Image (cartoon, rainbow over all chains, first blue to last red; front, side):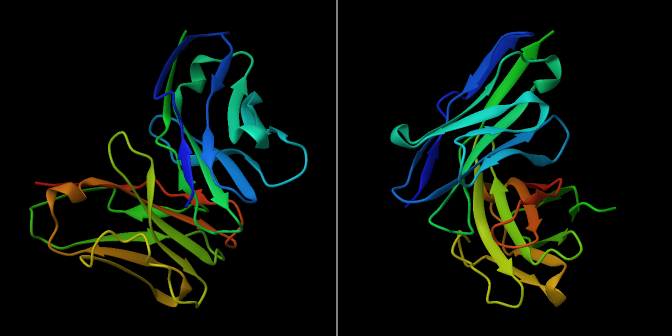
Length: 113
Length: 113
């Protein structure tokens, strides 16, 4: 079985603060990892993904995530957040070539201007 | 109109009634997923269609839930004898293939009174 944990359910930051959202997973084999974002009133969309290769993955809007296999983690980072980053962020995992992703419960990020 | 569309956007129904939710995937996408998102929860996988293969129904929570995909395109999720715990946002996603990026629709918000 595979599972994803997002420990921070709600994060509140001021603009220009640095961001790190935690994502830990449980699966013993090869993994594909994803971060999705849902802006208020918009569709869920892919922010970035890791399949293989460089464990530091860069996505849209200045976001990046680092796959640390030894820690079973795929934390999302951004050095300086903006008010427009206010959204719900979901981490997801596909293990062992599975075509069905497992999602975390999401982290609600609010950025104050 | 290149995105995934879903209808209706909102549905209010009485307990015990049947409902049908529709998903129009992106043209040419062979993979189609249905998810359920309850308040404060992550996305719960319901069912997966890939081309002409038999669907993966392993996520359907009960036999009151069923889905079909006609002609490899439009999909309908049917919930029979709705219960209050069925209240949630039902999301549809499509992708070019099983391992490709998923594109999500806006969801149908279902409220069972």
